[in-house]
Image (cartoon, one colour):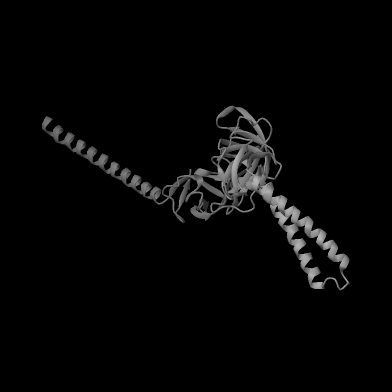
Length: 348
């Protein structure tokens, strides 16, 4: 009896093992079939494109520049005999900065004025004699021309004399000087560099969407890098009418009162803020191709569709859709790595 039981047990065990193997095979085939289906469809996350209000606030950085600066050059020959303003001094328009030796030109001017007075007397006498046989018409014309030349000579010498006083053409601080007492000057030689920092100008660059909001006279908040505890106010004084190669536009901001501690060349941030508007906003992470060649994927009829879009940045990670998308479209926000145009997708 025991001999019959043992083979029967073996048969039952073998059948059980066979059934288990068969069931496992079926399950593996089902899983493989499901995996095949999944591999043919990329799982993605989507969001509906819609308009929403957003605050138009953006900032841009730049550096301060003086409102005016120039290199003042001598217009006369001569030796520097007196210096009225040195490096670091403030000058108003018309202030005398230096004086050149004018003794020689003073003498030339005196001689020229004597000649002019004599010519005028001769001209008056000749005009009294005009119409008589005492002088000819040619003689009268010659004395008239001589008088005009004498007048021009006096004007030129007065101009040369005036040029011996070197005056400031603009107001500002003398940032550098190039003369000392005894320096021999000639026309074109540098005298001083003048920098006008009243008011200071902050130059920043903004995008095409941002420049469309900015108007001359707008108030702007300004933070200076080296003075983080202080906040300054400025007004937009200029906006460029043409962008550069990367479609950035220049904006000039004049700083208001309280800028005495700020110097040209310092770094600063300008913050612009305007009333909220409605627009289609998307996240930067939805982009493929980058900001310079922006494209996005949308889901249509269960498949991914690649679309070119035109965007403008309104924040660090937010973009405004200007062209390429419509309200209600399903924008792919995640699962972009293996995505291709026309491939089936599964929305998670």
